[in-house]
Length: 153
Image (cartoon, rainbow, N blue to C red):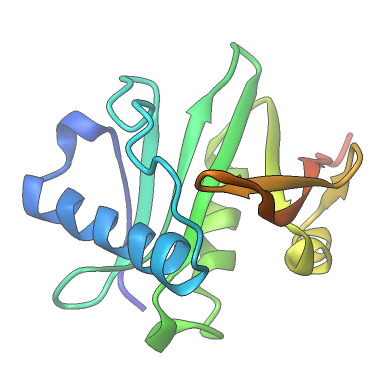
């Protein structure tokens, strides 16, 4: 498996960021048929971390980490290309975030992935909700808010 890249927007080469956006759109907008405003302004924030694994050509697994407050970080946009799934890349990225980020980690997991996140130490911390897709607020994807429970020494 290739190295993990962990960079801010200003550190990423423009072609690499283009490929990150392509991956995110391919997974969330095209594959999941969920048109939404992908360019939300958070990518360029100086505290946002873009973390990915690349093959010889482009990013194939990705997530971003947003700083919500001094002690809370939000994991989002977890995506792996179809041809690279079930190889443990997304788990490797989540583990990287757990090991390199202090404070509380939160995310909104797609409901079908709740058990997968639980296996990595996340627990549900709220009611499931539907994340809307495009203009039709009644056609969304069920999500579960989760928080990472750190081991207390």
